[in-house]
Length: 345
Image (tube, rainbow, N blue to C red; front, side, top):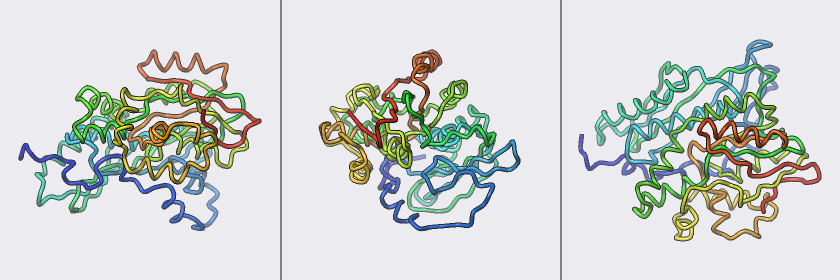
């Protein structure tokens, strides 16, 4: 295997910005309809993290897919991150992942097949940790590496966590720091140091399994995972079609070290610009923040944390339980019936 070849050389879109922007997706899906299936409990109509189909009165299938180009040079790490990212949608719905199918695009004429072997080993490491069986996959030749998983999970139909059902008088809990997109960009520019890059990679490699398990013991009213549309982009999805508004305090949001410094240098992934352009009008008070902070809050995350809403009186207990288990959780805002939409301060 040629040691000087890097996975990111094979992707023009290496990093978090490979995902289509929310505006384009809305155009593609707008007006798209399908028959009313009585057993279909969640589909693409409200940007849920996964689809849900009821199999029996007590059992529902939860299904998602996610894949993207390499965001780092090490194939094992890339595979682990891609799997953690795909599994995250299942955890965000409150479900338990059970099976996975791999999706592979690979340039076999220009890259040693052992790179794919390492990617699969990294993915398998995450799947074993999550007790999710790899049952197969599909691969095609391509000029660029792309990898991910279709993941199936199970849940009781009455226990589904949706993303736009928060109630008034609740606290918003975030379970991972923000800024991996900017940090990846700074790392590829050889500006971020190795310790900073490793911290971002560790965050992305970490499953949301522990956080989801702890959240299951609390009355969570709404939940999502923070990924390609950034913290504010996904928070907007939670606020849309919800009569209850919410406030996010930008000073309470946990950030990766020096992420603002790198954003000031212009080391901002393309996805952050796309996210801000599409969603900025939905966020009240955004203009009061510096442009740098806006980009950080819209920074596209790969394998980001969970954003959950729980009664305020239980917030401290929940955060303590999460931190005791090694989850870097924080209260970043609250919901209020007198408000409408998403506010930032």
